[in-house]
Length: 595
Image 1 (cartoon, helix red, strand yellow):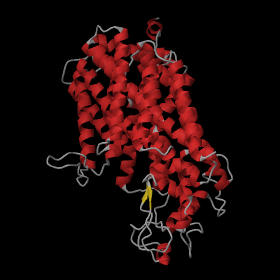
Image 2: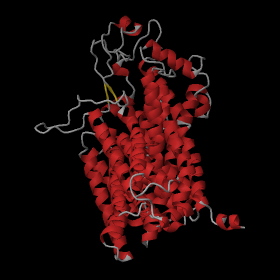
Image 3: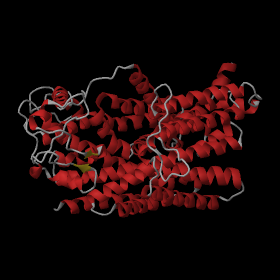
């Protein structure tokens, strides 16, 4: 079967499956729309949480980051998985015991403040909306490559599918759809990795293949990769940058990812869907298991993909007398991805070969000097294409290529649905129900929930079509905001009786303002009146801290300001202090102690 029709069959079939599940599991009440009636089994919820978490960034971008950054990219693996441990131990069971529908509802009730609820809604919308831009944009890119339609058309198709199953099903429909999406994406991620691991090392387990011998040289795969990179002038794949600034930034970035993960609202609300408090902790454990299947495979995918690229461009090796690939003999995947604009090259010395090496070092590598080349000729290689292009690079069967396409769609759509649900719940439940019209009927609230979901999809689609200047870095902004605002408010709300409503509001606003301003300054995203774009040459830096790592500093400021202000204002009411204790202390403990 032609590759186009294979892609259409796999992607179209998966979409029909998602829509069918939504019809079967449609929400009939606000409880089902917000929390799936609190009737989801921990294993099911763990699988849905894994799909909710493994966005286009995890499925598409993470392996590319690891492939081109090597050791330093391990921060993503440590931070994202560590965040789930933190969530399981410190947040999930207590939030489930409190019994809220949404994160702002917990913050508003715990801090007995409408203002605190509204600030939490603001933080939630900013974090979730910036995160969802990348998901919707990724849908358009994947469609344009695999179904040969324009980016705009692809984005509208993806938005229509999300609209149908998210608006109709709410949390109940999204949960079971995400289970199906997890199955699709985990097969899409691991099956190509198994094929490639067998090709390169003879080991069918990618994680073990990473440490096995490369069949092309008989040396360990990582040793071969490091030598190849050294021959081409690139940094070592496994080396660690031990300069103080690099170590500090890696620590702070890992911490930001951890507490950002524990503070992301679309992840937290998944733990409101289980029947019992103990099930919330079990759900987090199962989510880690399901996520680990992909995350333990990602380092192997990154390393093997990087080596595959090198051996494709330098088929005879990179040692003495090496010859680069003839451009007119380039594999089909080169041409396929060049049409998307995500891969490009230029034969600058007109020798008919594609020279690929690092030309930004102190001197050109030996392979460049031998060829007479003066500059790297691979002018554009978008890291995000690695996972999607990997089956083609390794010349795997067409059905594997189609499976990966369906997996990329599943990853983007599953996370987009979770984020959009978090936004719509905050609008319908926390703004309309709890702030504007407390007497609203359940049917009217459900109408508002579906209406705000539809509006959120429309806004996300528009932003995907017309991304702002900072769209490429939305993940950093989303994690930074969640880390600096929502996570501290939840931790203090559960474990501190002293922090009051004034302290919580002051802390959240401080974390939000500091983090957003710092990222905008550091990235040059602020707008200067009289200009037509966001300047990209203006940077700010606090002690050399990167913008991606600043969320953890924002969190420290949030904690410090909240405790400082709370210590100089009225104490938390006794009734609220008792409520805090009841959330932390298991039922029956007080009675047992009294005897």
